[in-house]
Image (tube, rainbow, N blue to C red):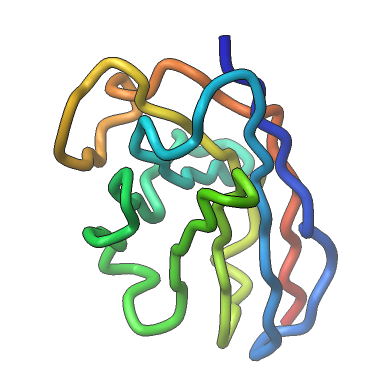
Amino acid sequence: QVQLVESGGGLVQAGGSLRLSCAASGRTLSSYAMAWFRQAPGKEREFVAAIGRSGGSTDVADSVKGRFIISRDNAKTTVYLQMNSLKPEDTGVYYCAADTHNYGGIFRLSSEYDYWGRGTQVTVSS
């Protein structure tokens, strides 16, 4: 079992920054890839960023490339999403996810992730 708890969301003006954290417990964080997804009202959940087990490989959606950075601290069992130059279209609930069954690679499909947090709300005002 893996428990994921997101934090760091909030209300910010366009152009501002936020750093999301995802604290993991239950199993060794370094054993699996992690990702962030988001869901805006009335829209489907979409991939934001993913990071491999050691942190050596990352993938970021084109919509946030150059603005968002994913990182991890396995010693602290935490994954981060640094969000800069935020735009109103970044508004949504941000979810942390863990892939505990693939032994390698990072994926954009939500179906590849088997544990999810409850999400944290990010609202960007114009």
